[in-house]
Every structure is written in structure tokens, then in C-alpha cells.
Length: 403
Image 1 (cartoon, rainbow, N blue to C red):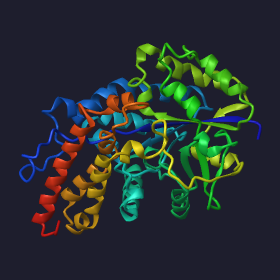
Image 2 (image 1 turned 60 degrees about the vertical axis):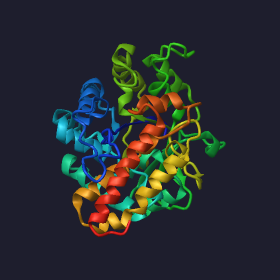
Image 3 (image 1 turned 180 degrees about the horizontal axis):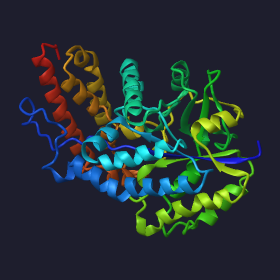
Image 4 (image 1 turned 135 degrees about the vertical axis):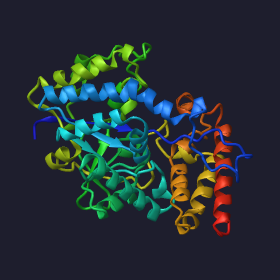
């Protein structure tokens, strides 16, 4: 196949942030996430702010591009807790996502409903959350995802084998050079240990040019224009497809409108499509169009975060390890209560962001962690989380569970 394809994938997620929860609240108040009177942690305020700056203008631009260019396609992943907040506080934003999917040229990926790391701690819970997400996507968009992406793009061979056994035809991962060796992310691959599922690897250099470097005036390639970026893609010889994966908030939130990010989004697809050999594809189209170039073996877990591209952003220090282990140690006891409110609170506490806020990597990636955290320090995040954990213990003991 002579065409070069861009697989553009945007990920939207917002956690249910914990309110300022003290040890004096434990055993008395069980409302961990009701934050209307707590400005720094107010989930409603944050979802409305990011919707106005990012989601709504980005979706408006994407819909316009879909209407203008028959060759334009885009892929989304939308966490269940994100969609839950849109239903509750920003229905117009939800409608704008639904309008995109109705075009038939926007594909949604499968993932865990609660944006959790459950795959690495409790396989049964992980599968429940994947099924919860599938049902939510079917309910809101009337589609069923066939391609899987794990939370934070966390991936290894075992996950690929699971995804194949679960019936997925594709899975996403980071195209991390130290793992790929001589291979390039710009081809389709087969995960080690599988027979049918295909692997799409993120081109992190080109993705990060847009997601992280776009507005940096100290970058030697600044400013990044549609012409320049298109030339880079066209001049890349060893390539069939470019998997450009990034957070939705790249547009308008991480890269502000006054930096020209929406102008770039408007002009780049037209520039890329000027060449009849160039196109955009959904995950499924790319899986159908391209055969695997080789097998990729990733026995160790790779993510799309930080310089190390591993799980240390979430479980790299004793605080994080203690918090996440304590939470999953309660798994069976929580499920056995059959108390939906308690189970849902427990699941929302599994959201990976809570552990990310406890990260103490203040050197290569500390500024990134500080940007995303509502806490003054990782230790404050840990204490706040463990206070809710103590209340969870109390609620379980009230149900007769031994804790």
C-alpha cells in the first residue's frame, strides 16, 4: 500500500477529585468527592472550565474538519468517570462528542471505566470496569469499541494476550525506542504471544511536538506550522502510518488558544490531504489496511508517562505503593457488601490520578506532576487519600467485614 496514514487519537479524562478530607471527617462524613465549596478541588468548576477552554472549541473544530474533508478521521478515548461528569455538569459538551461520533468517521477506544490500574492488581475488577465502560459507550454513543487502550497507555505482552482473548482486534501502546530497538513506530505490529490482534504504537516524538513543545518559544523548531509538520511527515521514508496520540486538553488547555494551537488544527489536515497519497484513518481502518511489519515483545510494562515510560509515576514511592495496595486489599470485602454507594466510592478511589498526585519525581518530570496536582505537595495528596481510606475501613466494619 502506497498511502501514508495518520491515526490521530485524542484522550479525554477528568478524575473525581477528592475534597479536602481530614481525619476528623472519617467515620462521620462519607462524601469524598462533593467539592462545590472547595475551590481547588471543585470537580464541577474544573470540568466546566476545561470544557469551555478545550473540549467544546476542539469538538467544534473537529466537526468542521470532518464536514470539510472526507479524508479526515479521528479517534477518541473517553473515560467513564469523565463521561459521568459531563452527564452531570456539562451536557452540552457531551452532545458535542456525540455529534462527532454520529459522523461515522470517529472511533472510540475501549478502556477501564474508572481510569484505573486494576489490570495489575485485580483482574476480575479490571474486566468489570472494561465492561462498565463498554456499556456506557453503547448507551451514550450507540457504538461498541473494538480497540483497547489501557489506563495511561500501560501495556505489556500479558495485556495484549488478554485483549485478544477478550475479542479486541487492536490495542494501543507507546512506541518507546529502548524497547523497539531497530523498529520504528510508523508501522503496524503484532504483539508477542498473540495470533490475530494488531498493535498500534504511538510516535511519541511527533505527538509531543504538538502536545508539549508547540508553544515553547525556546524550542529550536518553534513555531510549528502546518506546512512544517506536514513536510516532516512527507519526508519520513520508513513509514506507513503515523500514530499521533495525545491528551484532548492539548488543544486549548495545555496549549492555549493564543499560542495558535487551534489555527494549527484547522490548517494541518488540509495541508496533509493535499497529497492524494496521504490520508487519516480510524484505528479500525488502519488495522484493516496494514499488515504487521514484525512482532513486538514488551514483557515489562510500558506507559506514556515521564522520562522512564514505566509505572513509577503512580507506584514509584512507598506512599503510592502503600495507598494502592491498601485499596486493592479491600477488593473482595467491598464487593461482598453489595452496597453500590460504597463500591462506587471504592472504584472512584482507584482512579490513577490519586496516585499520580503522590509522585515525588521532582527532577526530570516534577514540573509536569505539579501542574496536574491540586495539592501543595505529594505528601498532602497521600494524607488526604489515606483519610478517605480510613473512612472506607469504618464503613466496611459497619457492614460486618473484618478489616
